[in-house]
Image (cartoon, rainbow, N blue to C red; front, side):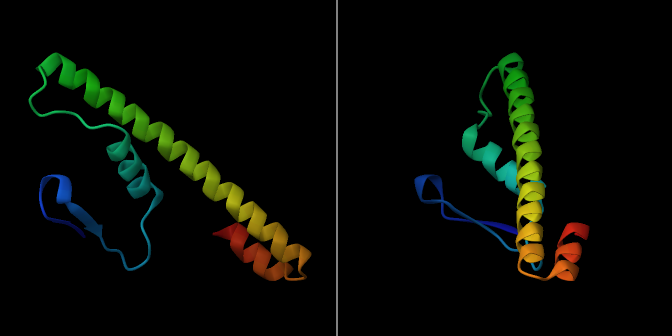
Length: 94
């Protein structure tokens, strides 16, 4: 669910999830903060900007996924080193 409260400079966006947001959500959030595309831009510039923003989102998504994998490796190794190999296996399987 996504709600916008307020307008203009005082707008607050709220996103609610029962089980956390997928990495695609966070990549979109990041790309929206990095770049916006004006509705009033000339069509050829707007088309180019939309394509560029889509590429930004894809790159951000890739690196978020890599960070999640790396974090799972760190947590898994930490659990193994702490004597919890079965829990480490569970983390690796997620």
